View 1 (cartoon, rainbow, N blue to C red):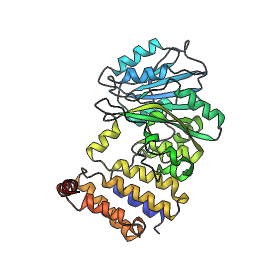
View 2: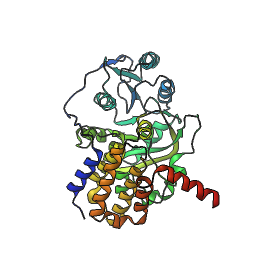
View 3: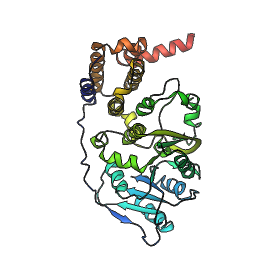
View 4: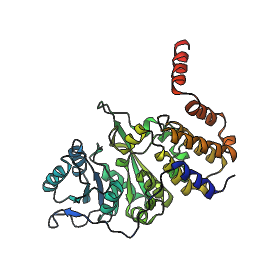
Length: 370
């Protein structure tokens, strides 16, 4: 089988866009709006909220945090990244209403999501860290309490998830995502490798919502120095979850506690624009962290999942499709398709050989005469 270094280099070629590294020692400057005389002195949990042009959704996101019912103190750090709407004004108004909880960090220039998040985490005080982006929200007033209780009962946990729902642009809520996917039915069979790569066989798993997680401060501090986290890959929350899974055990609150809003954030834009960078980066990070943990069958399943992800980008630019085909040839050369079976080859032909209008006609024909 192909060696690790060669395989990773091929993934980076498929990504195409150069990776920009972040220096671990840089402390990013910003201004803070808070009231030191009223802030809780020793928060157990720090909630981090990144905000950029979220004025329409921000009040719901903030209220979901500040109304949490806990037997401990917590703080909410809001990173307002020079929005062009009323987001900053809303943040300032809520800080005046909840001075014991809210700290607002801001600057005169837009710094981007990664730096916005890092500058808040450099200033947080809690032993545990939760996240809720400005366009998502929490639906359970006891979310923080339930997750902290699990951490207290299980010191070896590095990350604790909750179940969550999604809200589509038509304001329709989904069923609880993890429960309806069959995730909890097979949870006892998952290994550390499954959590590192977020590859869960025998389920309809799609993703974990950022708003549903809580990690330890030890994980957060490690992330600041972790080589993969410093590479500036797309969707840092996946990298953080992967790192946490590699550092300790994983816990779950089976209650539905958070909501992910569809069609709003960067993830939705990436899929809409047909950018394959997201899948490449997730596959790259998962490969690096789990290379030595995978046996042959797990590797077969993991690569098959990646092929399914990148073939889904049929709206991708022509150059991206060419890169994908070259990657397929590379994997075929090294025997990967021998482990994928017919499913991987079928996906390849469906999405990259046949034009989309042919596939639509075929689906219509089969549906009509089935």
